[in-house]
Image 1 (spheres, rainbow, N blue to C red):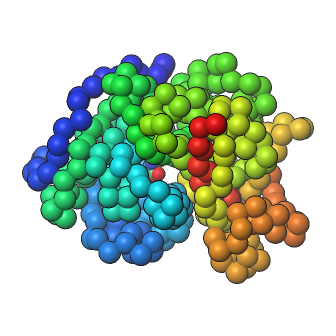
Image 2: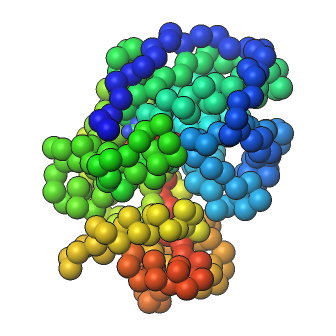
Length: 335
Ligand SMILES: C[S@@+](CC[C@H](N)C(=O)[O-])C[C@H]1O[C@@H](n2cnc3c(N)ncnc32)[C@H](O)[C@@H]1O
């Protein structure tokens, strides 16, 4: 299935206190307040998920991608004002809600390639705004990477993305597969070195985001540190950004079956991906390592021999071990 063209291009609308639409089958309510609390955010937030939206586990806040995302948002909020925020690949819009809490922006734009996701994101944003008596200029779109923003000529101060890396030719974008797999066609035109390290989505995202950033805007990439930091930094620079790792930590590999299997298939004699035995890593770093300078986390883990490749990680996972990987949230300021 090729990337869908944009199926909805609403103009951003002012959203204040809308009612929730009727629940449909396959939906469930999740109280994600513990995730917000873990980052010092006090609002009570409940969202509704469906079978297509990316999952969240609020009982273990730090094992979600949203924890490093919110921490990075908080660090960015200390150094600059973000008036307009976009999440590219928002899933159930928890990242958008976190951005509203942390940046207090005037405008939020949420996009996703999965057409079954955006209606749920809309509901969750409306519900949050209604419950918290807030208003924000809000728009949502279905489409590939930043295409919806570009086509609607929307520019933002911060474009955030936590996008899948594993190429797959036959994915159905209407299912939760869209969270873990990227269509192989995204690799077209990507330099071999980045394609072979499964960075094609990120490369294309960086290029597309440049077209929808305000003059002082920046891009933010939430990325598994499974490849060398220097390679990722080189990719940012090649795409026209100054990179900076804003936040870094050791995180549990979620969806371990499919992700480790996916990375294993792309390992070669020369290319191995970096994973770690999670509990040993936590012990070594005395926690997730989030208080350490970002580059030190990888050095500490690697120097102590805790690094394992994807194939070994998969077999260790199948024998009941918890596997971890580094997360780097990297900001890019156009050069
Ligand atoms: C790993 S989930 C992250 C969801 C949410 N941002 C979070 O951090 O919890 C990735 C999301 O990106 C979406 N996605 C995947 N490929 C995309 C693309 N090419 N363009 C836009 N969204 C995409 C998926 O449908 C999914 O909702």
